[in-house]
Image 1 (tube, rainbow, N blue to C red):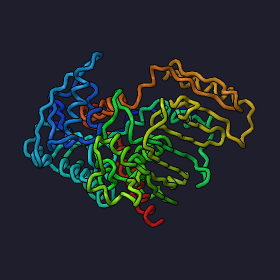
Image 2: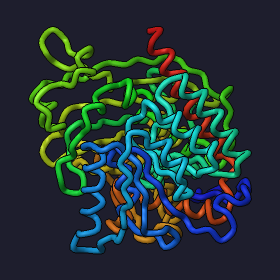
Image 3: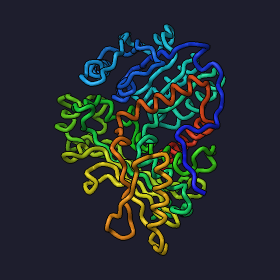
Image 4: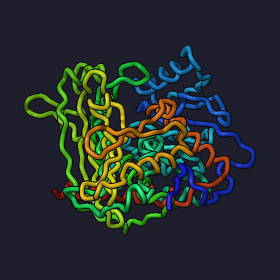
Length: 454
């Protein structure tokens, strides 16, 4: 039976008084060091007070954050109107908790203390909207598990920013995978040919909002940013859960880690200067510099695991800079008994994600085009204008998606935030969100442990 998957599920768990009766949303940003903290404020929200309190030490991280907000406020088209109340201090967490000028804390920065920040914020009765990853090591995961229990007792929401759920090719891949007439059943897969694969390539130097992104030096320190296997992999593990088992509550016992490994990306002094503006590696990075004077960043990771019996592969790779006209890229394949659903984002796609429907190699191809047409017709009820065209390469179709649905990575932050604000207003989260967040970070920590054994 064909069915469509909604982004926000109706089955929910109520948390009375998430904000307090009639209380508006008032944001506080704690120690912002990553540009994602600013992207939460790239848009205005009707239910959010325009005055945002920022607590952070004086320094370049704070300066860059405020400059990004100012750029949003002064852009010629659809400018924002944020008013920043800046509290420069050496103990931002303690001061923020003492003053409690807001009720929602935005966390996106140095990840070394993030799990501690999360726990202390929810213990103080504050809601938390956190950028990924919430944790970067097993000790932090223990804090996170405790934080979710405290959040439930304090009736506050702890939530991570999963922007990739809003990328249109991923959303359509998810929907098509739940149309049995087209997709069939998910194949169990093998480590050599997994049931579902998610691969992501990122870059240390890139442009954000049309300007070169200035990275803080600690971004290259895996003890502060986290290794790739626990950082960007958060998105990919989340998507596997969200696409394969929508609306279902997962358990840690559903996960069996098969293999995991990490490796380094070399960064020269000249590249480091280009990305950070600093002439040399900072003292805390010296331990990662090899004999040739090159910084070796353990930013790459791969894990292969089973989720409810389906073999899944997640791979994250960091390069220094993308080719001209390119950016971060994504590859994904979901293998079904009738069809494979593939997202490619290489040179052949102009470095833009494109979704393909391809007949499964072992499946007879008779009548497959009719099944594709029927599936697209079903999608059009929710996604008007979506169509499909033969690629001319075997029994494969490209899903043609109107530009109006291609909002881009930066716009997805507003979509996540709006969902979170809705949950706060209604005092309820989907029942599967919290348990599945815990399963997600459990999976990542299992990979972290196994990568060290190998």
